[in-house]
Length: 118
Image (tube, rainbow, N blue to C red; front, side, top):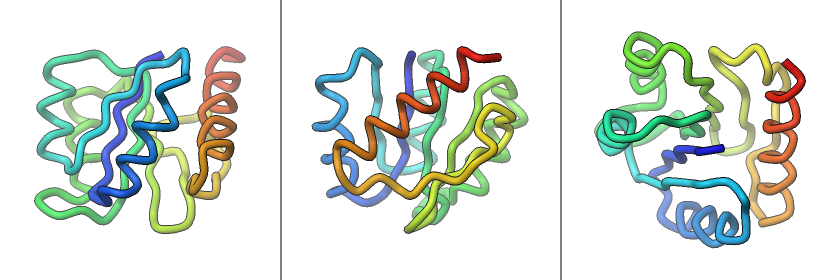
């Protein structure tokens, strides 16, 4: 599966990049909604994981654009503490925002398992 991760926190982006190196899935990591739209125009993604509060374009605005232009892409949004699904009936629960490799991999594995159940 291919994921687009959008987060303005450079430490978190670096962590996601490192954590995903050993994954069987592919992750693109960008810093804001403007870069995310550029990636969405270039590649197909199975999921978008994005922060709500970002400069240039908020997660709310990005969600609105994705819903209008790329309606089939599920979106997992995060505030500083939680992740939850929008336009994503597969993901109806909240996840604690991953702060370590194990919790990140566990969240991704759970998302993939839920996806394959539908």
